[in-house]
Image (cartoon, rainbow, N blue to C red; front, side, top):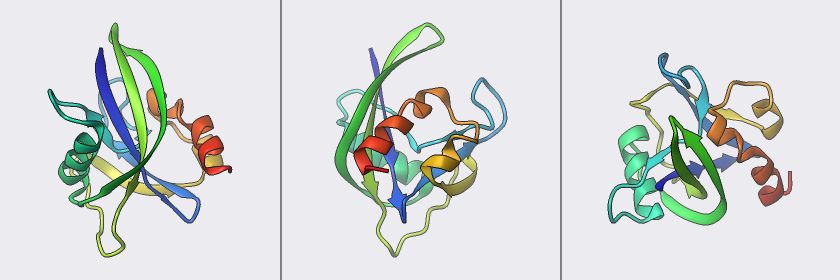
Length: 130
């Protein structure tokens, strides 16, 4: 089973999402940055690598939030969410998203979100007591 991770960045009760470029099933949908774990890589290592590659920032990984299971193109995935901390002095510059934006939990209910990432919205409400 493939494992993927997403990093949840929270600031002032808003969460950082990236807008996927057009194309494919989830093009022009918002997502939490992250990606697939490579062979022998821990979840934390994956998040650090993905944030460097996708957003050009060095991050630290915080607490585990939740785990979800989903299918994509008849393949099974386990998706893990962790808190991610971006240092105050760093600015994200995305190489894979057409836009980065901060959303509240309520705002996330009204935008197109990648279905696997949308599974975490109720978990974020519980985790952060929102």
